[in-house]
Length: 131
Image (cartoon, rainbow, N blue to C red; front, side):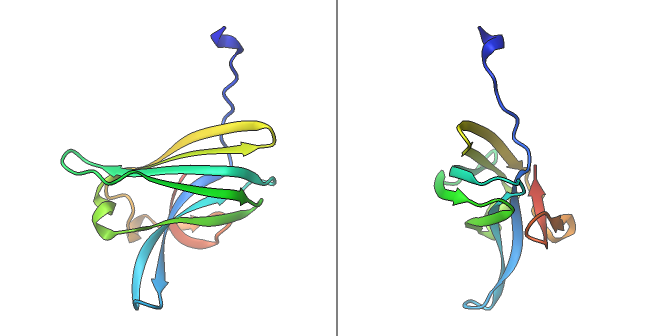
């Protein structure tokens, strides 16, 4: 019974936090992105984000991307500086072909910072990402 259930492994999909310059406000800010490093399109990408610590928690946010083309990315949300100290979780579900995939991407507290930046696949910018 349980051995007959196939749980496909998610590969080539990441959540990245990237620091960008906001021209309207004239400040640098962190934004979260969903990155598709696969050779195929992702359909109906659903993302549930939340942040928490022992004493604080954020509202649960829900996001949808109808289609995320191969080798592309889409902005999920702006990240306020206050929530960078929390554990930030992104539950991502999507369809690839006729199969549904699901994975949790977790940024541990204080891991989104300038010192942790590295090159983010597909985006070719510096940021922090989890596989």
